[in-house]
Image (cartoon, rainbow, N blue to C red; front, side, top):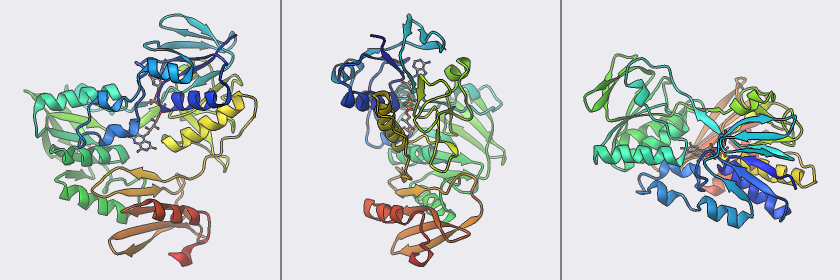
Length: 393
Ligand SMILES: Cc1cc2nc3c(=O)[nH]c(=O)nc-3n(C[C@H](O)[C@H](O)[C@H](O)COP(=O)(O)OP(=O)(O)OC[C@H]3O[C@@H](n4cnc5c(N)ncnc54)[C@H](O)[C@@H]3O)c2cc1C
């Protein structure tokens, strides 16, 4: 029997395999992955330092364990080079395989900034447990109080800054915006995070960007547009990820920012599906959107597994808070829709807790942020979403 093939053993590929096996115990499933197929929770990468966790400790299951548990064949170290949608074949670094259905769970690639200087190629990013291991090794080689400059004060940059500073390293956080988390959080919460990071000892260089990075003896010299010069042992880029479109585009599948899928997770070829960081989902209001978080990929995996096993199920992605893992100022955020400008933030304080609600011009709640966050407060705010709750504020 021709197998269903999943490309990728990140959280998207493995979650889909798990959901599929709940519904169909026997149909052949083949998973192809360029990496070693070890299962790990990627969100742990940006808060593992302070806990002293190595990459090996983060990998909770090997590929062989996963293959046994899920009754699937996993081919590790196997990069898919091309997809032929006509003959329903994938061509890999080891062999070619036919599929009946194909699922792309190939993730995203770190965006590389064009920065001048011979040190620019030494800039690291952490989007995989192997990157984390190399990053840790580099820090261990430098010593106990490593100077780390992080480019980008978004979600991942702030989490790494808090984590590394908590582990005793000397961290500088650089971002062109005037506040950290500027794209996701209300200014009052960004300011709260800024002061918590400063209290942790993080040096914030905001409203500026790295203009060049040069090698200087054993370290790197980062020159900022503001004129400031920083010496760093390690420079970490956290400026964002770009969905990996290479296979999809070469196969002629429709793409935008991500691989475009319909309500069922199907790409422009009905035998090919996509989910996870590589995907641009059709959300309920009809707009395609990339959603590079765990909750959406889990919803997509459940729906696609049902569709693949004969029960066509639309992917219904509900608003889910992004939990920012910065222990010195723990936040939960549901940002307003991308590009929404016709509204405003409304701030309330309860003791040390700050709650910010984003209302549109008709007073409908479209987003929120809260710190310090906890489950009951998040749930209450989620229930308010979409309602005219200005009076509750
Ligand atoms: C540091 C960090 C912290 C995060 N924290 C959070 C958080 O707190 N909460 C949250 O919701 N989200 C968080 N995220 C985002 C979340 O982790 C991702 O959305 C999710 O893990 C993406 O999973 P994925 O399977 O789509 O992609 P990936 O994990 O990137 O997996 C892609 C897989 O595809 C394989 N692959 C790619 N190309 C090929 C090819 N051509 N041939 C074969 N195999 C291929 C790769 O080897 C890999 O196995 C975080 C992300 C990072 C980087």
